[in-house]
Each structure stands twice: as C-alpha cells, then as structure tokens.
Length: 398
Image (cartoon, rainbow, N blue to C red):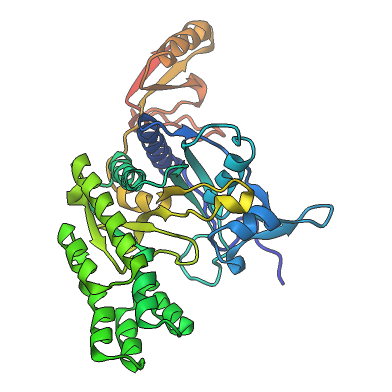
C-alpha cells in the first residue's frame, strides 16, 4: 500500500472550514438551549468505550463499529451513538438519582461505512434521553421536543413520521405465528422502505386473501387520529391492540402541545426493530430525502447495565441539517480590524480589548506594516494581506 500524501485523509471523514464550523456551532448552541428549556441537562461521555459493554449494547451493527485494542489487548470501540453510553452512566454514576432523568448531549460519533459511497464515517449528533417514564406522555414529550429542536436548528419545513413496533409485531404474529423467518423478512422490507418487495413477499406466503389484505393494509395507514381507528380494526392481537392504544394517547398529547401539523402516524415506521420496543419515529425535511432526526422507545437497554428502566429519546442528525442551512446567510459577529503603528500600539490594543467586551463583536489587531488596504497600496509582506472587504469596520492608529 502506498504512503498517503500529506494532504490526504481517511475515507469518510472531512475537514470543516471556519464558515461550516460557525454553522455547526450555531446548530449545537440553539438546539441544546432548546433542550435545556425542557429540563434536559447536558452530559459528556468518552469517545472510547469497552466493546464488551457499550459496544455490544449499541444499536449499531457490529460490522459498523470502529474497534481497536488498548495496550492490554482489551477491545475498545469509538462511540457509534450516545444512547448506550448514557445508559451506562444512568446505571452507574447516576444510579442513586431519582427517576425520571432527563439528559441532553452533543458529540461526534463514528461508524465504519467506507463501503457506502457518500456516507460519513464521523458525524455529529445532538439529542436527549428520558429515562424512567413509560407513559405515552413521555413519548409525546420526546416527539414534541424533536419538533422544537428542529425548528431551533433552522429546519422549518419537515414532517415527523410516528409508528409503533408493537403493532407490527402483533400483526405479523397473528398472521404468521409459525413463521419467524417470514416475519423478519417483512420487517426488513419495511425498514428499507421497500414496499414493492414487501407486497411481493406477502403474495408468496400461504395466507388467506383476507390475511394478505390486512398485511398490505398497513401501507395505507398514514395520517392523523383516523389511522388509530382503522388500525384497531385491522388486528385483534393483544400486542397490536395495546400498541395502538399507546400510540393514540401519544397522538392526543401531541395535539395538546399544538404540534400535530408537524406529525403524522405511519404504521410502517418501525426503526431498527432489534433495538426499539415501542414508539419509533423519523423526521424528514422537504429539502432532503434522508431523515434529519430519529428516535423512539427502548425499554430493554437499561437492564443490560443492571438498572432496568423504561427509556425514550431521539437524536438530530446535525450533518444533514447542515446541508439544509448551509446555503443560508451566515449570522456572524461584527468583525473589526484594529490597525496600528508601533508608536500607538498601547492605545490600539486597549481599544481592541474594550471592543471585545461587547457582545456580537469580534476584533483582530494587525501592525500597519502587514496591512494592505484597497486604495492601491502595494506593500507586500510574508503574511497574507488583509482586504478592507473582510471586515465591517477598520480602526487605524497611525
């Protein structure tokens, strides 16, 4: 293998130039501020975790984890998401804290996606976890906060599709009680949004026409409260019935928040069906074909760390949000340049210090000998010359 050139970097990672960093930080600050107003406290977990604890408990496929060995030969992983690390903290360092616990985070995460063209191996997530509340109102809070967080991030035109894995599990168990493989195949088609494959697979199954119609019927169950009414009649399975009752209560609470225009019920929405145990959702912006947020209920995770507790949460996909807001006018501080001759350096530097104490002002200082204006001065130095157009104001002390 040839040695990489000095300017090359690994596949799937990128450099963020100053303007992009400004936008990333604006998204981070605005969304975390929104989450804090809802009572969520920030937490920071390590970039490295043990594979045998957080790694195996993660929602990420094992093949997509970045693994490495420490000096003792113990397998470590770069965090691939934040839910499992936060579950570890809640079960250990916060074990004595009374439930429910509300936590927020912003961090970079890593997934080995080098075989998937255009995907990033390192990206950013901002999200929350609500641990210790199994009520529909807790799920509705998570969905409502996702809506408000997307607004705070600058995404205005979006929809959140809301589903429940229990409904599909019950429906499939009722129709295919002895065929677990077929159930998993159908779930996989829905997870991939491959509705043609889903329909074709149903038609090959040894089912009555009525059963096939019921399984295909969920593809039409998208909308508001009327979906709950239709879904109740679609399956008599108790698991499915409980799931729909829970989902309907979530919808009612979302209506009480006054946010139903941003949410629709979609019973094909199952998320990662090996991870979520109840409500699950994804948020889609009009400008992108990929989700900008996702979340749901995962009541089985905490018990893997020795503190069984229900939990629900979501994560914003910050890099995708950056694609949406990246072309909008950039909100930056007022930039001031202070140019000075050495004889007036003290006066210039003190003026710069005073200006920096004001909100919304960024100040640079520069000796006159390295400053080149736009009036035709032809002095050249080893430093990059500054242009008057780079700044909102230039103060000269000569």
